[in-house]
Image 1 (spheres, rainbow, N blue to C red):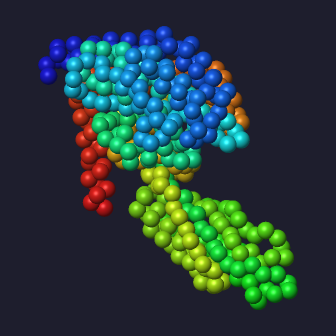
Image 2 (cartoon, helix red, strand yellow; image 1 turned 90 degrees about the vertical axis):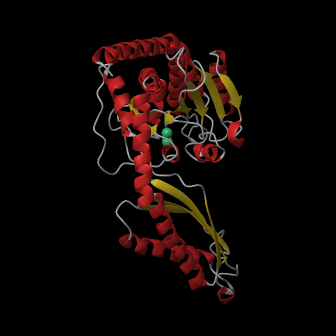
Image 3 (tube, rainbow, N blue to C red; image 1 turned 180 degrees about the horizontal axis):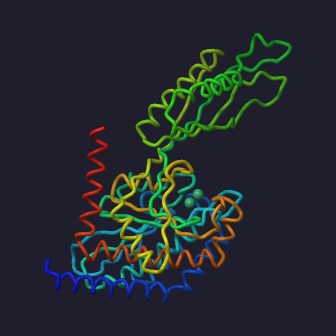
Length: 408
Ligand SMILES: [Zn+2]
Ligand SMILES: [Zn+2]
């Protein structure tokens, strides 16, 4: 490409980004109002009927073709708008809107949802005339049910070339690690008997549980540093004078890779088996869908960072270790190039899932974060859709990472 052509391309790109940011400003008041409305009406995972309907309605009013209840999930939606002639890439912007039991929107998903709506509307406007599809996917139950995993299983990401969402946090972070995580539920069945009068006739399911708990404690010495195993007893007996016949524990097993989670999971199940054998109980267990590790797309993250910096904002260095949780965005990041940056909202040091974080999510800081995140995402969509070489770079990085993992 000649210098002159590159200059023209850059000028066109800059103009489209200006339109993107200006469109978010036009929607500012409406997005903030909806953010507060969702915040004031918190709904738990898979029960986000109001939030998903409000979000879908917002996009429908902006000309998107909207389908509610996609992927066998009543509170999921898919909204699509074609910006020009057929062809071109499909870029997905993801909206979460579930709240936390007892805490409301203490993870700020009202900000995630409304920034996604703003970004989708603004990107669609900015790309007018170019071949591209802007898709906004409403993804339920991030906190508890792994809605995105179910949507992937049901094909919602099959046609997506790149995906993004922004999560509120305490600083601007472009990439961050996340652990793969699986939930294990173990049940022991024994036999109840009078704990003093006829203990020899009982089979103690609490002893099985405690043996498992202690065995897992011993296992910790022999796993890699990045492993987290943590659980609670959810059933541990009914009365001290009755030998417990039914007990249950729920554990999370996490590690940096899903393959290692599977390996550790097998050992944890063996600990449960040890409890059953030692006490004469029977044991059954089940595992839920696995939240996968996060594969950050650095090419996309660099574009997002440039757009963030164009507003005079500053990206922090990602933490080198620790302080990471798990999210179903990890699963998305393994099926298409994905970013999940964090936008500064609460003061540094504020814990997520806390009342302080919840208050920030509906205050001025939350409003500011949602507007900034919407602009940066919309501009990043413009980068990817208006300049094929940028999307190609993101896809090449994704393919290389996939290949490297397959070779491991
Ligand atoms: Zn959360
Ligand atoms: Zn969250």
